[in-house]
Length: 113
Image 1 (cartoon, rainbow, N blue to C red):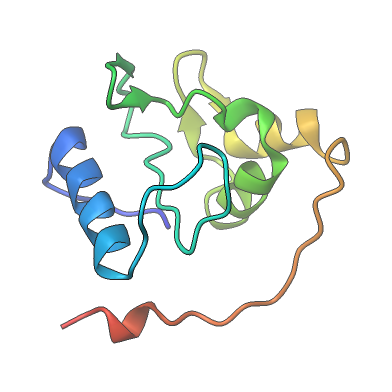
Image 2: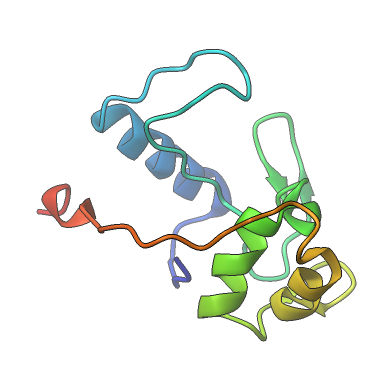
């Protein structure tokens, strides 16, 4: 999802984690299966490196499964620090990881007031 917010990055991350918790996600094995995983990928041109939050997401540039949907909704999104677009980053990794697009249904409406 691409969105605008008045929330600072740390508050936005806290909201994402609260949504994960509210939907039943509990922390398990690192890199293990998850019922829901919400990541903050970029936040404008912010570059942060804190224990709880790194922006842009530290693995964004190497994960086709993240870049493909991002480039689909925002192909010209500029990714700091070098200004590469999401579409250009996708082109640099596309086909290496065997990612296939699948259809899925959006059930988030059940969470909204």
